[in-house]
Image (cartoon, rainbow, N blue to C red; front, side, top):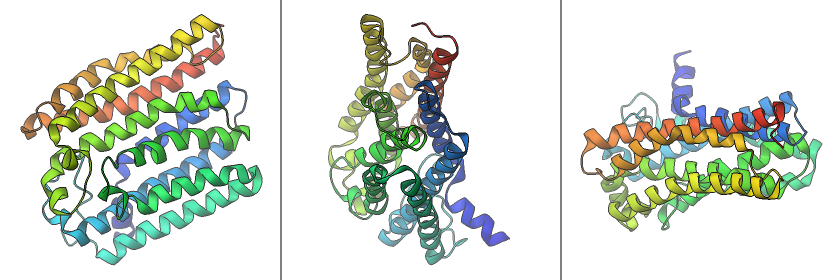
Length: 306
């Protein structure tokens, strides 16, 4: 029983909330456009949580192997689970958690391919490559944050829509862009405390390769872009009278205080007392923004403006 608890902790379950939020948003979008299957949504959500947990466990494995976990300054939002370097979990078991969760997730993916068609295959293959190659390969290339933005932001929204609607739609791709940017920024800011350890471990993520100052500018620009994208889509809806993104999605602007705190904290990367609260504000912004986007689609479905 104690081993099972450690295996669950290795997936960093406190961060798997993101998968639940993505499931909610993807399903809300699917329902708005006329298709919903709660059973499929729950199963796909479970698969996404397993995939997310697998990434966390595999990342811990490679971070320990490279020595990064022995040098990193762990915070509540970065630095891995800490179970392997603290001697609570054998290294092979951490890898085992990653492999098993990814295989179960793959089984769920194969199930959906079987019942929904091979059009889902490119999405699953792309997500799988992002998962498998992220830590050992992608993190050693400049600007690797695009990978989680795509694999754990854009693709899940498209996937949740497909397993319920049985098709893709350009309008859903547009709706998925904020999630892609937000997840990109989640990884980007969380890398700030680990920059020295990552540099010694051979990583070339944005803070390491371009420097913390440039990384901070990218983070702030991308954060602003989320609001610009949402506002632009709503304006397009008002002009064309065709729903590019529901007007109710402007509720996401209620997250501005969290975004501002994260932006301010990203400028104080040399002061951990200011940076760590910024990491927390960023997490709150990312989760709440997507929840409110989902609420926007639900409200438009129930109380349509157009």
